Image (cartoon, rainbow, N blue to C red):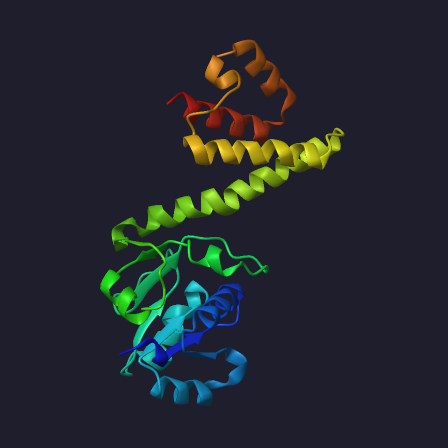
Length: 228
């Protein structure tokens, strides 16, 4: 079996990114989305060896049970949280927006896979690094993926808005954030500075007094984690 029998199901952002990536790698595949109709899906499944489900978690099980369970194809999905004993899992540890990335960046994306040999067999043209993730660890894995991704972005957005309200230029904030992330990448959190590290109780108290209650709790929680 080779990659010329892959059917990719989905039309969302994830599917669009993979379609772009596969096309540039020369992966041979076909696609289907709901507006194509069930008859075409059934026909395409007959001509496939592998079916990739780039759809919502709720739709993965539904599509599998309705169209794939009794077929001869091997199904796989891209979810980091969903588990089904009959479906392979290949989760890309990456955030996918409406903006497509360049080819070299796609090659850097790591995959959390349930079966490394199956991943290599289905995608022989992909040179992406991968690691094996057990089903027992998927809950914790995806929870932290969400915290690092959406959680971090939401926190940064709130900070950007708070600074803007008191006249801090957005350009100043972005330069600050750029250096923070670069230092973290270089030093893995060992370069943290500020009153938490210095145990500057006077400054910490002033910070807390300036914040509203929800943000005070966030500040305290993060400060406690820093001290551990």
